[in-house]
Image (cartoon, rainbow, N blue to C red):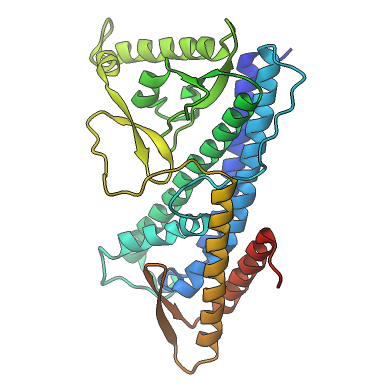
Length: 362
């Protein structure tokens, strides 16, 4: 018979598998580029357009996982015979769109590369050992950005779908469940402090970058997350005490004295931070992503794909080797190269995909 623990462990395993599969697929695409390709917006925008469709499929999978988990958990707290209607896909972030997020590994690569402007290899064969080590650090930054985005977005999508399902099924309270087994260094202090919180129907459980916490329903006196958290929290405090030399060690005291605040991130919404973290008052206000926002972001990506499609045609039909232009608050330079035609195909695929999503005629 399934228990709260086994359901939670099954969720962990499935979530890890989906995140790892998506990251692996997306990274293979980025890793197929040459060092010069990372500086060519014609290539990086095409690759990120391709990855965006993969990201949308990934978010759909994570939402389905969250709904399946929520349905199982509801049955275990005695809520049966209800089938809540939850959208298959909702964008994860406000004030951006999936295509822009998918392009961030290339931005991370460049932000590290500009620190050593004297190193600009064209291909992988141009690298000696010293240069290779430097370029590898740029690639590592790009891969970390990809992994961070995938885990953060995947967990947010899964948890929001679970919360939507709980609320639509009449659940009025739920709890965050920590997962120290999923991190090499264990649950972060922010989540440890917040693990005793109970959230109501009007709340959205705050996360943070790479957060692995999940949600569990509370019904009457049935609170599965409390038991799961209590066992893990005791282990964490015991380990902290041992690290501090036993008794009420320094590490344990640091955990109990940590002060946590909930602030609004302009893309992800409520996030856990240390109380001394400074809010950026100039950042755009966050709104909860919904189907209307999803349509708006899809429209934005459709318009970008339309403009970029024309720019690829202009570049490849010109005798010039590059084309610079400004769009949506950013400057782009498209350059001719071996991978540009393939990148153009990816953008045309994104154009077709977003047009179909919006129900527009070809």
